[in-house]
Image 1 (tube, helix red, strand yellow):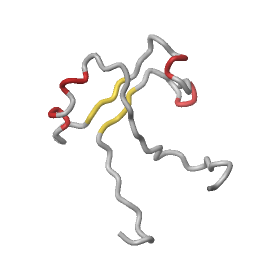
Image 2: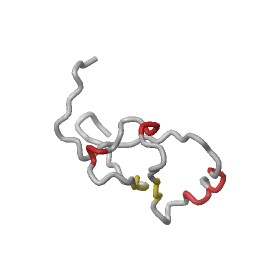
Image 3: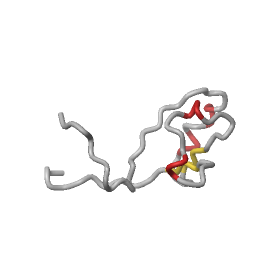
Image 4: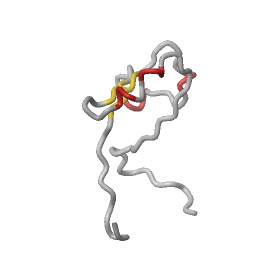
Length: 78
């Protein structure tokens, strides 16, 4: 891939939350106890081989791509 090309991204799953509107989601999960969301992994990608032991895990790192963000720009550039 050269500098002119962008990587092709494809989803591996989705987060399903309980908020009716995206701006109603709290910035920190502890601000909304009792209303957890769920991560749904897409079938047929082999995730069932790596996820059976997640029961009881308290925290999990999730890396996401905010694909619907078209206006936000960072206030400073490195």
